[in-house]
Image: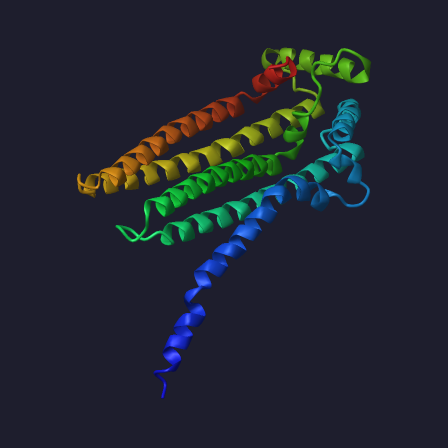
Length: 289
């Protein structure tokens, strides 16, 4: 009596992958704009809604930086602490949304790959569509991973991330005078043997942490890319020469991941170098570099 129910059950679940793909596609379509819109909303606590406006945020950072520099204290002034806390929440929210988007895109890519059977089970048009979709999803996943890494770095050192907004080229007002003092202190600190001012000491240590964070994440990504490249090259060597298209694709992706691993490794070394001489890195920044 149970045999007639089997086809019904099979039919009931036959379209599950399609439903999952549709749900993931909708979720990705929602998350792409959410990466750019939602973080400011989540970071705001009612009194900081104005920070969603870039011009207002930049102006506030400049004003509070002047107050903090003149406070002669390593602890943030109340206004600076308020902005730094906002920027920390912003980066956490953006990194979390970007990570979720990346996971959704990877899942979509896997389902797309499974939807096209190997061999002659799919026509040229379908294979081309799947290949194009795979490229688009890969590019979007890479972009979302970059957004995630950058915002994790910003969450680790939100003060340094905020400092990148300072209009260091300004020549008028209190901010210009404060920037001149910072440049002078950075020029005097390395060989003077005198401890830097409290605010500058915080800037140097936070800037070092900022670059160490990126160096660590870049090293992890480089190792992952090297591992992926080795897997692709092993599959390339094991693939029969008759499967020319597959071999070419494996070789191309193996070469691409190996090249990317070298680029990411250079990024890691460069950031470690900057972290080891944080004061010099700050000096370059405040000089407009």
